[in-house]
Image (cartoon, rainbow, N blue to C red; front, top):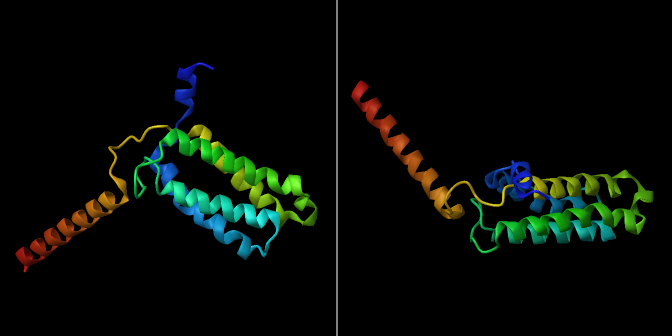
Length: 157
């Protein structure tokens, strides 16, 4: 496949991918409880994929991670495998016969995972900062804004 085509296909910034990861990973851990899937294979797989995703997302080399250890291409490959697993396990275990709650969420999130892996850029557009530096910058910006507002209020009074 032409590498230029693949590069143009990757339109999702790593920062957006990271934000989605921060929601989807924990949601996959909690969802089996909400859907009352118990210890069924599809419940166990969702929890395992969600837990693993949460762990490696916080170690991936992109903007919202705690440590920049896992390269983005490796992260995307793990997402694709996790998404395919989520989508296929209910089909392979016969869970689809027990009702839609046993397979529709898995298929939807699995497709999302595979799609995000296919369309996310492999390099961060911003310099590597990590979550701690990003939050520190937000706090500093908020303090500057507060000081400016206080100064304006004193000048007006």
